[in-house]
Image (cartoon, rainbow, N blue to C red; front, side):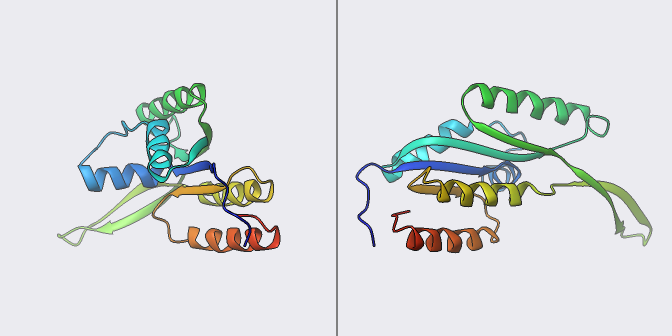
Length: 164
């Protein structure tokens, strides 16, 4: 195993929708008023790492479906970008979902789903590891699929004789 670097460069990868749902569950927030850069910096400082980059990934509603949230996220992502956060967004895809109500009637409505956002994040984590762009990758998501990414990073570290 190669020696541990004295100063560790960290990149923080944030799953935006996952962060919103976790904040809502933990603190009752119904509005995504978090500051990604402050959060990323706090996580890195707590571990003794240097934040070299924060990256934010999210799906955003279609403007015709939900103009308020589309405009909100467009503005919030623009502010993040001006602060130096690397932002990746993709339009939500909509599919119909039907639920049965207590009176046995059915109600169908459109549900927005993120498609490809987690894959983009995983690809970026792996690509940046190959390029040696960080010593520590921090993935802020509760999605268990990212455990596969962690396994791949360990393989890259071993193949490249790098501490990651």
